[in-house]
Length: 358
Image 1 (tube, rainbow, N blue to C red):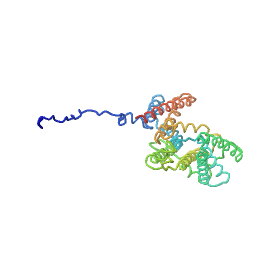
Image 2: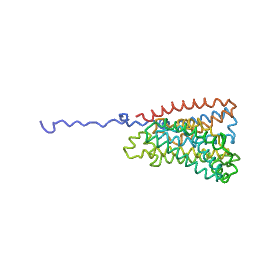
Image 3: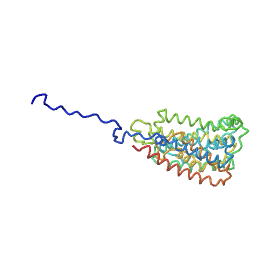
Image 4: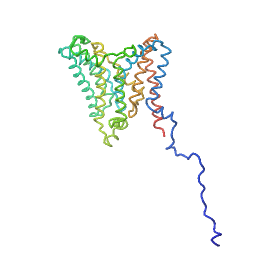
């Protein structure tokens, strides 16, 4: 057979244009689905819905002074919800946060008044006490391996008893003495409890601090090595330790951040009302945790944001004040919170499955 008669080698035709088959690993989800998987998007939509609802259900909410009051109520929750949220992202939570606020305020008030010192001495001492409480919680956690639920429940009971017993012992009453006429009071009040005017409406300084702390926490989480450590220890502390993350330092420092938040809110309460009731604060820790959960922080740790708890706290403030402005029975507030919390947990469960789905 001649060369000319030999068959030409078969040539495979090029594939027809069109979408390539996928093995499932490279499929890109729709943009809307990816946005909903962000921890703060769901709570933002929920906050908008709650705001719109009360704008129609409670016309006084439309007034500027009413909105300023709602923002103030939200800020007192939100300032504490931020460090609580960071702690939850790190895989832990703190049941002593509510009474720790009162412990801080009591320390500053009684130390300043009983020793007739400048109130700033009491403020600084209260900061040291609050950080020490946070350090104790973190140290007990990492040294014993006990769940944070048990460690902080014990701290909660200790602080609750100490708050009441020491206040009665020192002052002979369940509340501290009025410190409004003491040296340094006005300067401290300007920092922690002052107001300023915007468009004829008085706005509390805590609203500004709340937003500043939220911006700082967001930057820390997204732009710093420490933020990576928080997510790492919340996801798996053993894996984080294996790649060099200082797990002990991260856990203890997160509890100390909660202590700092308790100190700040405690100082605000003290310089707003000039005195402190020793039995207050019980139950507030659940509100802080709920605001973080509603804000998209998973109870399992390793997931969340700092912006989500801002909207979560706003929803709390909106509901708490909106019920009053609507003229409804305020006893329904807790029921609303329960519904919001259960709804947020279900949404977070869906978000977690969406975020991990291939």
